[in-house]
Image (cartoon, rainbow, N blue to C red; front, side):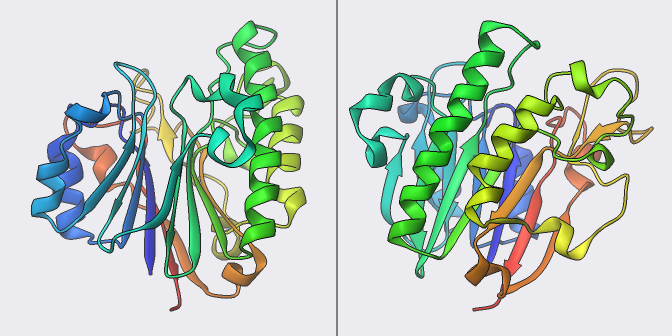
Length: 263
């Protein structure tokens, strides 16, 4: 089973890129973030022609997540409220969470808030959002030990995940508070950053700014992750960052990250 995560930064703008990538890399499930389109305008028929079922939770111009699956998914749900109830409904106004079940594996696709600037309202919202994520994932784990959580986390967990960590303590996506919140939400529940099981090298990134020739100079951040529960870690065969789509004309600023699990 191969599962990929990719922040496409507008599915309609990057549709040809996604189609071409899926044709060359027919993963079982592609988890997409920043679709930036309402559900009724998502290009389902295009992906159906490739043999993929689309499951979407979107909004106009911002955010949005989707699951593309070769095999129909079970128990698909969008948002935190589907699991935690109406008490967390405010965190579902932005479409950032979708989950589905494939062959006994619960796949959770996330687009974590960016946070904008340290100390801003959006930064505080991000920290609170990650707190709700902890409760959400804890509940899912209690229901099913086979949990894969992936997406754009907008957090670099370690200094080696940033091309230059100098001053990162005051830079959004790398502050101690964000790292601690993500650690509590995911790692403290027993999930593992599976990329690091296979690759311990510095300079491995999944996002590069459009400015300053960042991609050509490899001035990137690793903020797109796969986190696996212990039972799935034992099944993991590899996890790679595919840089090829970032080389295309008018690419997303992110690139796909793919994990392969033994059946």
